[in-house]
Length: 345
Image 1: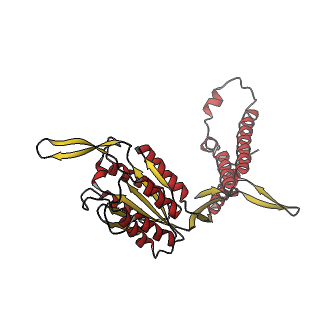
Image 2 (image 1 turned 60 degrees about the vertical axis):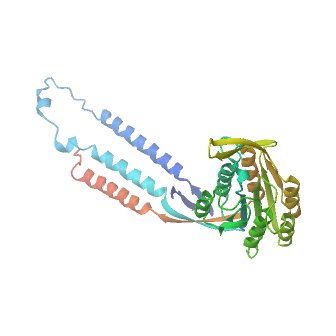
Image 3 (image 1 turned 30 degrees about the vertical axis):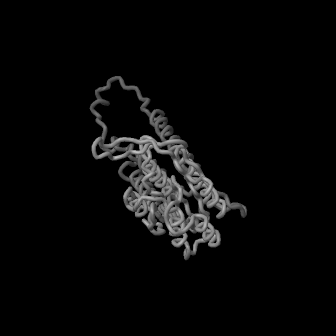
């Protein structure tokens, strides 16, 4: 970081700050006046003697000393310029930040069952859109640990809680259909997430569950899992995805190839609402890609991390070289004016 700090003077027990811009303005005005004065002085001291014959003047060529006498005013301007920069106190600094925050631990539970292949979020299926919105959500977080659980007939941890969002997004990209046998084990997914959050020291612990079906597999009932989450102060946000009515599902036919069939959407909204309300969270319904994006943005606002940033800047003074150059040009101008370019009256 580079800046001009100006300087302070004490006058009659009062501390007066002189900003760098004021110094530059005064220096520029003085330089302009010097140039104007020098031009006027040359015109004023022009020869006034009249000659009847100009041959004598033509034969008296200019000497090298008179030819380069303009260097005196150049050296004086340079001296004033360097001294003005020195008075403005140029400084270079390094900035460091100390960030303290109360991080939130967030477990994402993502449904990868066959029903997520529905293409009612055209031109992509539900799983693809959900993964893209999760990526946006993760990229908005700052210092929260985030993990990922995927579920279908059973569930497993795809990525444990981590601050390395790059690793998390890599594991998210690897999520695909067929990782687990088909089914919807919502209770098992919640239990898996709760187990990951069980021993975390964070004061705030959250589960965000996304599904498009009804719990039909697993040994743990979703409401039982929600009760366990409540006792452990874990908040659950639930998201039901899918348009109302029938949705198009792709089917790989061995004879006719890929074709589409219409199947009804089955989302247990009542159960998802009870899970969220029991733990102090909220239930959301995403009927389109835009709605899903808005839901994750709203959850991001509801679960914000409190961050305190302390900035430290250490500056190094850089005025010394400008002082040396300014004094050097000033001394050089004085020496040359009294020696090489000295005027004889």
